View (tube, rainbow, N blue to C red):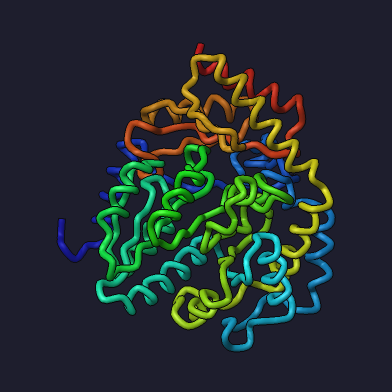
Length: 394
């Protein structure tokens, strides 16, 4: 194959993924409401979205979208130029109060929020004699791993929830190096929780910065959905809290919630913020409304938690491999890529939209169905889901 025929090389690369059942592609999915979609003329119950509280189609969210029309369709500039409006400022204040921090910074995505926070931390690390060292849970989101790799800082990975290993890393830490621990609160693929209380105990013994990615914890856990740290009474232990607005909040974007001093570090050293156009004002307006809905309608949070407990308990009675946890992310581990793909196809034929998750998103041999629950799923739909999943083990 000629070296300069790069498209032929690309095709061969993709063909290899296809042979291993790892090729990814897209389908056009038309939303109907918070829990139903249409694909190629067929209606599906959506058990694959992260719309845990059904806010994407909530009437108050739609109204907030319309009320913000005066601000235009886009911010048209970075936040440090002319893209920082009153709506952006109000949304950041609202998110900060909700998360119990001094301030917050809005980003176009949760991925960029993690990137901007890590960039600012790496810059702070440059003021230390031996820089910064990032200690990250093995199953943390790719955005955190990618962000650290893009810096020149040291990266050490500890086993998933491996507190003993994390302790050893902290015991061996260089006193002239900034230590930073990165973890998710609720892990996106396994649906289990970080050992926050044990991490908090370590923080009383060792000096380190704790960045907690609450992408899947925000909205579902804690007072008014403030997150797992809130539910655990550990908000003050977390130095930097990342909120992803595209999950339970039902819109798009992300935010870094922190002290005012670290906010200013992001504005000066977080390239992901400095060189990005601000989120559209409508996103800011909807973020404000979402926090208000969480306060006014606690039944949404209570229902999704109840459904999560019920579905997991029912599936544990079967022969299916369900990891422990209590979140609305319910992984059904099948093992091989082929078995996960076939299981997803069987469920989709029954009108249940559930996708197979394969490497490199999950480790080899751990392919799975990733089932996600919403408070808007009806009891009948939940029973249909359980019946269909249980048949996979028969």
